[in-house]
Length: 90
Image 1 (cartoon, rainbow, N blue to C red):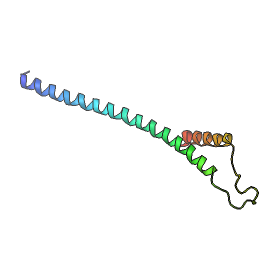
Image 2 (cartoon, rainbow, N blue to C red; image 1 turned 45 degrees about the horizontal axis):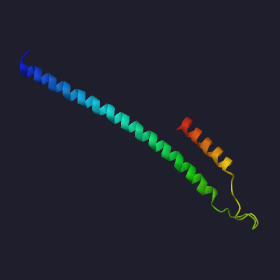
Image 3 (tube, rainbow, N blue to C red; image 1 turned 60 degrees about the vertical axis):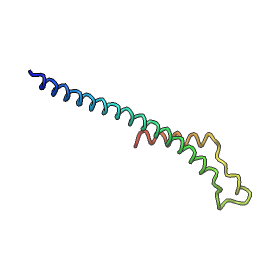
Image 4 (tube, helix red, strand yellow; image 1 turned 120 degrees about the vertical axis):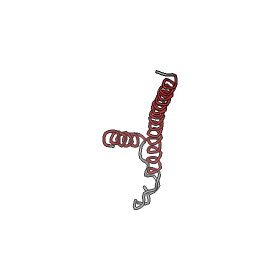
């Protein structure tokens, strides 16, 4: 093998190695972003559930018209059920 052939092979191996390293780093970063987005989505779903609970319900009698509060335990149970459904079905 001549020196020119050796330089050609070493250049090819360097480019190949850097390409593989780039792909590994890209896969790791995408998985980190996915985990962060899933955590953010869970937080947003809890906030949305609380916002829905605070919406006044029309059609109730005047006595119950402003007091349609749902207990936090019910909100937590609904949120847990939705998250479990998303984990198993999406």
